[in-house]
Length: 82
Length: 473
Ligand code: SF4
Ligand code: SF4
Image (cartoon, rainbow over all chains, first blue to last red; front, side, top):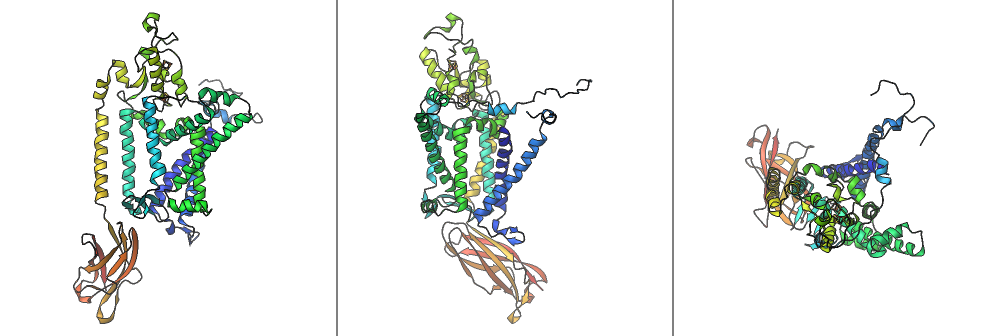
């Protein structure tokens, strides 16, 4: 449970900050999606943007968590799962 | 490191047992307290929540007084309207908040956590509901342990139901700060809410429910960044919740009114009430710990015990490291508030605040962006005049609609060949295309500086003098 939190929570906070900075500087109407101007409502763009940021940040946190695994987690002999 | 190679995997002791931190944790059932600090905490619950649930309903000039209109990209705060161009103010506001937090923490420890943090406030409200429905601490512990029964089911359903209603209301209010709340209200009841509004309402509601209902002190202990670094803002003169070890130890049970000296004990009667009231479930008698959110519940609780024992209050009290060591009273503690760290924080904070207020007070109420039309640089029109085309983006930041006159100057014989006025509604923006003509001999070849003057017809003082360049072939 704590591991899930450690991945989802920091990424949520950072996604919030990223969202704030990004959309203060950039108007969603100025964005292009596959060469077409974004046609979603602004609210939808903000929301999708936030969830997108969250996913990206969570991926980074997941990787951090993965690289932080200690020898005890990795040296486990095959077949002897606790 | 040993030189002998290890063949078989040895039993590693994990450096930190992260699993147990969370899963083994026992649910904390804080006992209710009353006392001066509890009163303060409740006062802050009322103040902050009246503001939060109430302000979004206030009207102002025919609109919502406080509205962070994301769709229109405009923030309304009573008489002020902020545009994305004003992001600078937001940055300063964040700096001010951060500095105030530093200052408060250096002087008074975790005042924010104990009294004002939404996590504390909502936990307080949710615990109160829990206590009203399921009873006091002992009843709740018993209920937790009891097998499911009709009564337990009824109590649980009532509690979760009440929490859900409050959470949804909180989610609704939250969204109401970002989309006009009146419309939100009517569309809620006609089931016409947009998908994203619905999503955020439930999202925020679910977070409130989870954080305040179930996770509580876990949020402070495992999720809050401030709880992790507040320690560095502490110094030996910072006020913290402190147990007076010298006075309290050796602790031990005794009858009422027994003089501690007579039984060779300290004044702590080891009743454990300070632990029972603690919302984070720690024992303050073990010294200052990062889990302590500074809520002062243990102070209130212990003071009541001291009263019953006829001992002086304040075995647990707000004090500083120095004060405890040196047996200082309040006079000396207050005398040590002024110290370099506090002075520096205060000066910087004061300066930023002044700059902020000054900036807001002198915020221009009219903005004009001049953009050259890139398609046609310069062309000759009838009468041998040279014409340049511009686009003026006129932003009316004020609370009233204005009609503005547009003028141009800077070259001999310069004149407009397009509309000379433009009407812009309150807190609105409009773009207008303007053609500027000059006789070819009035300037040098290439770029010449000209000026646009946009002036309100109602108020001469509202004007903008904006530079632009005019191309002559
Ligand atoms: S409430 Fe006071 S007397 Fe009771 S255990 Fe805590 S410190 Fe000791
Ligand atoms: S130790 Fe006292 S002040 Fe700290 S969190 Fe517990 S009850 Fe609140």
